[in-house]
Length: 172
Image (cartoon, rainbow, N blue to C red; front, side, top):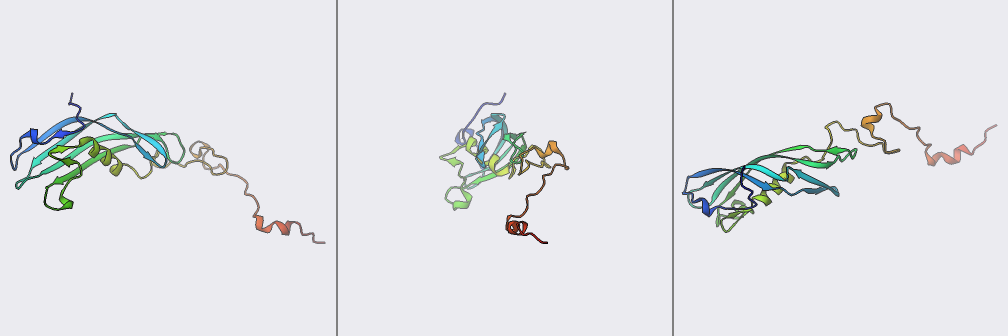
């Protein structure tokens, strides 16, 4: 079993320039709130594969890979949904080389793996959490689940209120 590691001391790896290390870790994964709904990451401790390479001139090249799912209500029909999120993320940390080359997850030789996992799930996850790709959602009139009601589900349309005065007109 991989050790649970919300953060990692990069200096303790004692990497020389050009050297790298592959690590298997379990990282606590936080859930997300999307559209006012809570989605929990599953499993709660995500097994991740982390590759750390020391770059010549200082700094690190980081590569994170894992698979997780987001469990919560479908955004269309409110049934349980659990889409799988595949993450393949990279970061570079070269202190003093400009803001674009400084990872927000590395501070004083410590990598905040849990924050990186949380953000990677949010960025790699679907724009809409759905129970299935072709979810039909709920009927806007009666809130019936259109996945179960089928394509024949319909309602009589109400007359346009702008024409209501014409219905009062009596023609002889």
